[in-house]
Image 1: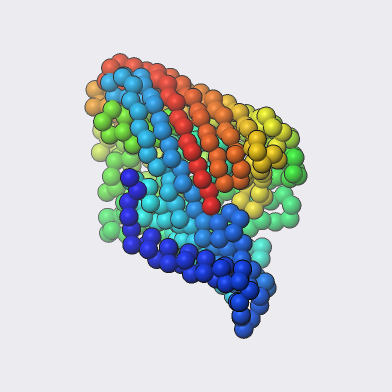
Image 2: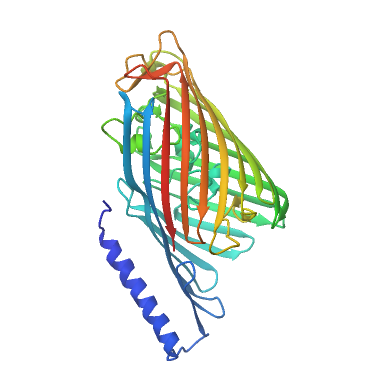
Length: 434
């Protein structure tokens, strides 16, 4: 069930006002003391002035998911299933006085935070953009791609090794972005998140940077490389840090009865937490291949942990995709990311198949065997997992996308309460974007 918020009424009122303006334009009765007004209804509702000095756009996405999973993905090994709204997001953005921009994104799905993004941007220092507010940091190629157009239903398991590098929850920040020429994109941001405080109650700051070099950017060919770095300081007063991968099946955490989101590693941190990443991709026509690597090292608190082990983790993924109907994936150098597939045939749509392999390892974990949901085997000092994802996407049109994924996971030195160290899952999604 989708929660109701007072903001929805305000957004509805704004949408109604914009629709009224649109209706008046169709009737030919709009008057303005400035530039002419333009109304676009494809891909949401956008009202703007012809001189591009002002604009207002309402959009959003609805993603309805269903998961069925068993084995390690569950606590008792028996098959479980879950249906839920992964995202039900209302997005409002616009431009004021040419150089100023604003973005408001709010998610109304179950268990969602109030605001996904709430920011103001200044674009007058071209090619540099300055943004302030609640902003989504970007670390990694899949994370850079909108959830509307990622290939798999859920992003790679490697992002669960250091979720803070892409977290916007309960924190604000400042970010600089730039796209130089035809080959370079970069961004760096400083973000303050609740829950990571020093002994005086002051929030520590995390820094996230990403650089992209794309020597080939064409409609049917792209060559992309990227490097990522994130760092933060963590005080011993902060809560226990856990690495709890979903292994690319969201239903394991949505199902609080039998879902198993196992703890691969945990430690009390005290010191520097650093994450490095590398990414590469190549697209030629309907074929694309991409891969990412991530490594994390976090200083442990020897007193609290009872040892001097740091929390260490690493992982990588490789993905190949092919569009059966011949279309190429879109790509935007501004953001260093892939974008939607636009169907050539409006009746048939575009059909895409893909395979992704994920491999993650958590070293020197402080988790003890006998954990309530999953525990390390005796004498083990690390836990690892491999996930295979096979999927198909149907882009019925530019607004509707239907996806089906089949996943298998195998885990080393970790098992659920029934002794399972492997499992499989089927994930389905119906998406509407406006």
